[in-house]
Length: 188
Image 1 (cartoon, one colour):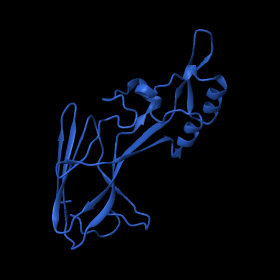
Image 2 (cartoon, one colour; image 1 turned 90 degrees about the vertical axis):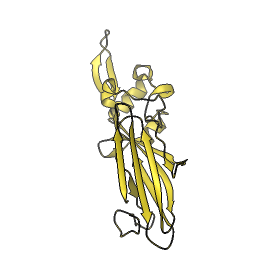
Image 3 (cartoon, helix red, strand yellow; image 1 turned 90 degrees about the horizontal axis):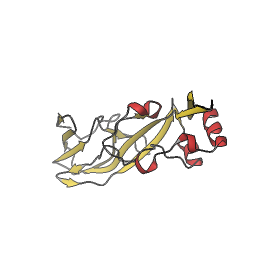
Image 4 (tube, helix red, strand yellow; image 1 turned 180 degrees about the horizontal axis):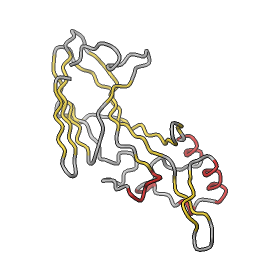
């Protein structure tokens, strides 16, 4: 990376990177841009700029001014444990917002009990009839990923405007274990 320009306003974060491949051949990497973690156990205090349960910060990427395709990787975590499969088993969304919002009280009692036993729901209070009320207990972790080829002997401008707060991008290791962060790279 040759340069990074970070601009923060009340409603938007824009990052502009300039990369240069100093090698004589193209370099292709998987690039990940982690989006903010959403701790659903504190959902009453979370305000998201979008009701899209997948791209909840309206993330986009432009490479040399042209919109780039990316895919979203989203996981549900309780501590260090990935609980996405358990939620999928119950057909529950990993980030229950917008059209995917769930009402825990509307879930069948047997489902609530199983989810609570697995640590996916936590007791928060009782209702007027003394029945236990639950809240979701997982953290939604989301990253935008794309394959990026950096042409030889040429600079590339990558722009990533995000509504709300975001984190720095991180190359993902390839199948052979290499990554731009662990091996010498011709990218600047």
